[in-house]
Amino acid sequence: MGSRLIGKVRGGVFLVGLALAALSGSTAFATPSLLIDADSGQVLSEEQATANWYPASLTKLMTAYVALSAVRAGRLTMDTPMVMSARAARMPPSKMGFRPGVQVTLDNALKMLMVKSPNDVAVLIAEGVSGSIEAFADEMNAAARRLGLRESHFVNPNGLADSRQVSSARDMAMIARALLSEFPEENDIYGIGALQLGDTIIKGHNGLLGRYPGADGMKTGFTCAAGFNIVASATRGGRRLIAVVLGVSSSKERAVQAAAMFDRGFGAYSGSGSLESLASPGVGPAPDMHKEICSRRNHAAIVAAEQEEISGPAFGILGALLGLPSQASRVGSSDQVYFTPVPVFIGPKPGWSGPVLAARAAQPIAAVAAAKTAPASLSAYAAEKPQPLDGNSATPEGELTAPVALQGALQTPAPAPTIVAAGPIKRAAAAKKRPAPAKRHVLAAKAIVAPLDPARP
Image 1 (cartoon, helix red, strand yellow):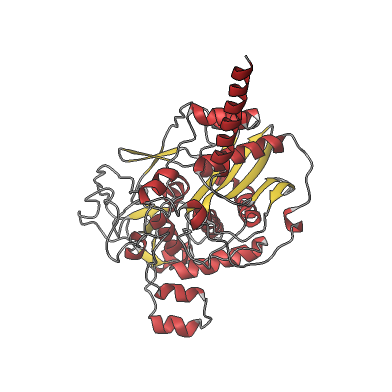
Image 2 (cartoon, rainbow, N blue to C red; image 1 turned 90 degrees about the vertical axis):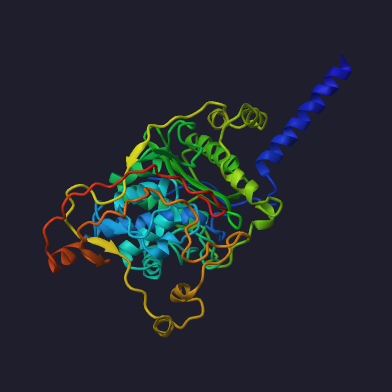
């Protein structure tokens, strides 16, 4: 009897050890996290909330904010088509893999951005709204100043690795809060679980959706340098909370940690001050998490890590052993989650006769250098070749790394649309009026989901 009891105790200790290892991964120190009340901005809990961190694909929340601000200013509409440029098409995965010249409306582009997190579509949006990646980054930083962000600097719209692009848990929570409060009519796009493009179903990466009661969106992100990040929102009893978790070692861990934070937050109505009251170090270097996250993983293992499903009875047992709140434990359950896919399409909306936005012609490198001479200026980014990402070679210029979605979509000649550089839509439309182009059929061959890469959502 005594030996059996000792065996059970030892087994329990071993399982608890496994649980702790599963949740802490190889991270040797506490990583940033933050929980706030979305309405009041009150901080309910925080850990290193203002530490500089690489945002990875959480960047795309700011991309959405700038794009929606441009719609509010009358520069374009949600139905405005934007053109996939050669530069956008060269972005590394995750991507949609559309050929240069394919048109995507802003509405469809934002849905793709939030669900699949494609880097090529992020650039399509940037070029459509501002004319270039560099001009869009300037708008991102201007928006950051207006919102009162203090630890953020942006140089691209997709979060691909760049040591100059940093943010913090606090700043990401402020962006999320601004999106939810300033553009409530678009809040549904952050909670889409799956899209349907042609015959293909594209699933999202937010492990809370459909598993945590009240979870209603936002965005995930991953690179080896950043670790696994998430900005998540959940609503219960009319009260909405926003959780941010940065730099953890797996997609499971980020979901379970966010769920546990929500459980504690919904039971607490007082906090430790406002977002603005948190002491800020300003913009500075972020820690590189390669060693903790990816140093012992090959490319296939990194891809597999990002594809982890928040499922499996073993993980649910580990959550229970750790004493996670009941709702958080449900995130680790073995239940399969199915979403009704939201349809998206390429090409203009039927009947569209307005302008189509495209990238402006690039300035000569010499002119760019003369315009901005600071060593770390945003314009310098225009002259850079694609850099290796997380230990893997970047895509060679001119080569697509994914099969092209909707083959043949550009092969049928069609009346040329009115393509203009980014600018006020009324002015662009008045500049050149023309009859609506004849309706054309687009071959909707099976859409693809591009191969995965370390630069992941």
